[in-house]
Length: 556
Image (cartoon, rainbow, N blue to C red):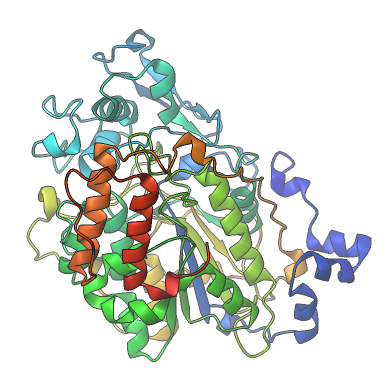
């Protein structure tokens, strides 16, 4: 193993067994001793009987995994070590323009970039092509004009506009231009030591170094493509607020599974009051909100008892105190304590919990470590830097008109981290072939004979199945141990929940309540002059959310 990384500093289960015995292992990981007795049947044909996906938020491949391997450590790895990577500083920058460039470096803390970069379509266009219409410079999204910094059809991505867009977006958000120290953080990523769980699993199993999200824009459209290979022409979360819950009518993987008599569940980490997956596909899945959307605690119990469905999708908490690895978002949301001390550390702790639950699962006639496959990925890069140009992609429906903001869905989004975990995958595997979010749909179609492609996009996506290449499975004692770094307690004093909401905070609350109202929830009217606090706003959102998703209710 790589001596430079935390993966190598930890003993394997085999070494641990040799030193203190299997009894100690059983005490260390609940269910492990039981697994040694039950001995589930090993058959590679069943390796994808239960597929689990945990999808985090808004990180590029370079940002989290770019330093996973140095040149020569593995046969081929497209990372950042040994490369001269930089982005130009625009001449109109008020601070540091004389330096000309920002070179790629290492993040100085676990909360960068702060504030959150622009992640909507016009911002990503600037990131990828270095194009920023003077009319859109320093402007918020609502004031940007067509063609929204889009390139000419023949132009290739140059990956040199991240600094330009971050300065522009920062100024629009904060009302002032950032200093060099503030904007240079967009050209920084994390080391393996800083992200020990993610890096240990990436080195312990398979890493895809050319896995792309499907759309050069933000959360909802990419999450929609993940399960539907389409977003019904939408590329923005909102406006309009009705776009995804009402007008996104694309057929989903969930429905294909049901048609085949197969089970699925969406597990949301508490205290999530609502599921983003449910909201995005509400027009197709509304009747399943009460039955198929539950908590991560339910996932842990299902894994322990061998009751995982054929497909399990895990959402981190993407609400207040989020652990979704998303960059900080609370800079302007006075009174709404959305940010953990670090959503990266919180996300690593959640990932470790999910991984350990699968590793220790032992049912001899249900889900277990031999027939459960775990995919770890991210919905989009969220404006964080990556040096690899995204490839072209076929529109989901070539006959459809241009979608929102004139986008024709003929380009992919950025590279994002993707890690495949299974007893049937060799350690230190790097998959260099191009994969994409719709590869999950393709894989499930192949495994369960779910019918033809949903769209032209999943039709060209490669199957993940061949990555599970071992003839004999790895026993769980040979899987790597993961030890997340401590997650600091959430300090509400940083953003007191009894502080009155800012204008933006009120707008967010109003949007959420209006959103839920469209889905049939009775929500209280909020007077414009209401002087609500963050605690009151959270209570309102939770109450409305639990009416939609009763399975997410519970002690928090």
